[in-house]
Length: 305
Ligand code: NAD
Ligand code: KPL
Image (tube, rainbow, N blue to C red; front, side, top):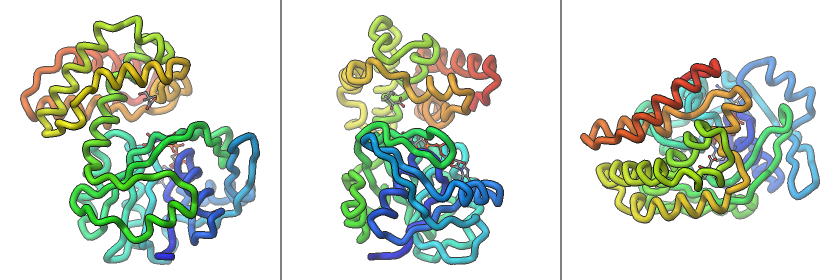
């Protein structure tokens, strides 16, 4: 074993990772945001994982950000818009050679954290696993998937990857994690906003081939301008394949809006738009989509970033 895991954020994906690591016998602490959340957690008796029709409660030790034990490996499982501030709260506890694992979707939050804490090794994760919260501290493992882990500045595998095998957490070490993250960002940009604006399941987007096609062309051009040739290759075909494979599902952004939760738009469409602007790529479809999406978010009383 190579040290203690600290999981920052006991939500859906953080809970899924934490329960699997803990039941494999790995040393782990959850970090909860404030004394009230910690008291509620203790009252619940731990984190419950519902999986394959069975449920089990795991009494994982939990603490506050201001605890004093050093942190060597931090798994950040907050939403992209909370991640930097959450790391700042525990930053005084990070050891000199600490590792920060970032589970956030989209792009932008990872780079901000890597710049802010250059002494820590930042490992980016692109996850296609599915989990949601049925109630506070009750996590449902809803969909099998993959976790790609990688470090854009150091391709060496960390020594603790074997612990993920022990915990039955599916993973692949990605030599080019940026390509994975850009590809997922582009797929989410193509599907999620259109599903929100048309208020539909993913499959119904096949009835709107024109905006989907234009969007995929613009997104591919943005990816190529960012030197992400692999991520651009065959984007539209993959988007169509994913739409078919998830035809009956509502996208995560659609679910966020339906449930009155803030979206990660700034780290998805916002990031694609900023990259387009920076590289002088003209993206009228993307721009119009972002404007319409932000207007809809404001109408729903949600932040538009
Ligand atoms: P979530 O909202 O279920 O969980 C986030 C948790 O972080 C919440 O419990 C929140 O209270 C906590 N948090 C926020 N600020 C904190 C702070 N300062 N200190 C401590 N805790 C704090 O979100 P999620 O669905 O687990 O998503 C996390 C990230 O993973 C997102 O970027 C999401 O896009 C990505 N992701 C999620 C899934 C999924 O199936 N849920 C799949 C792939 C990727
Ligand atoms: O990742 C997704 C999401 O809903 O966030 C899919 C299903 C791929 C749609 O973009």
